[in-house]
Image 1: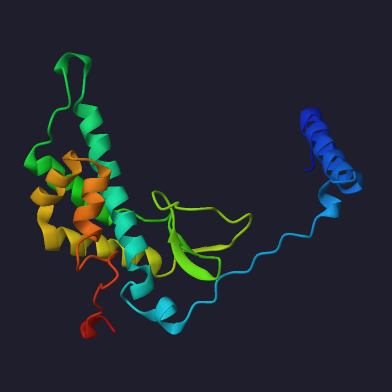
Image 2 (image 1 turned 45 degrees about the horizontal axis):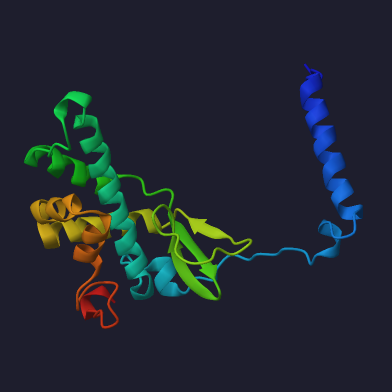
Length: 198
C-alpha cells in the first residue's frame, strides 16, 4: 500500500532541492567550484591482512587506546561524584580493573583508516589533530577493531591496571605519555619493530 509523503516532508524536500539548484546557478555558489572528490585509501597487504597494528599506525592506535581508557575511567568516576561527596572520589581497584577491561573489549566501531595529505592515519574519537580535509573516505570495520582491542590489552599487560589508573588520575596527557611516550613508546621516533610482529 502506497502512502503520500507528509506535507512537511514534501516542503522540506522541495526547499532543499531548490536551495541546491539555486546554489549551482548563483555566481560564487557551488557551481563555480571544482567538484569535491575523495577516494578510499589503498591499503597494502600488511594493512589488510596482518593480525598486528601496522608500525606506521601504532602511535595513532596508542593515542586511541589512551583516550578510550581515560574516557571510560572518567565516566565511572563521574558516577561516583555527587554534590555531597565534596570532591573527586577514587575508584576501587576492582572497579577500575573492570572498567579498563571493558575499555579494551569494546567494539571500537568509531575507528578506521583514512588518507590525509597522502598519509594513512587511524582516525576516530580522541584522534583529531591538525587540519581536517574537506572531504575524505574512512575505512572502518575489518581488522581495525580487533587490532585496537589487542593493542589495548597489550598496554594493560605491559603497564598494569594500577599504573594506568595512577596516570589517569594525573590527567589524559599523563595517561597518553605513560602508554605512548618514552624512548620505546609507540609515539617516539625510535619505536622498535620486533620481528615477532612481522
